Image (cartoon, rainbow, N blue to C red; front, side, top):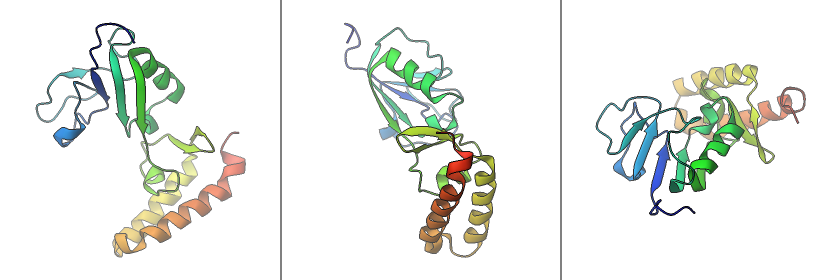
Length: 161
């Protein structure tokens, strides 16, 4: 840990276009989009190239951002460069929402991030559309089971090892 970071925390992808509760904000808050409301200590920057010195922060928090980025390894490397530790949060691979959002590029399976095959995106969006029309919450478990079946069916041929 370099002297001078004073235990500062950084939120990467703090939700620049959404209303987030104050509890998600940190000492410094970074996003690629301008916030829709005031966020203290906001920095407009790309998470892949953060404008901070090495080890500027004690902890980096990145909640539900990595699945959207073009290069997961480069992002983790950049977080390790500017922070002493990193806390990543991302959707569980059995959660249908991990696949239904077309901006999600990655899913964590078997100990690493793997690309989501585009046919899975389409299939899950169709399943979601059908389920949502008839009591979404009642069918969440069924949707998740269908996701698991789709992943298993596509895993060997579509997901690189």
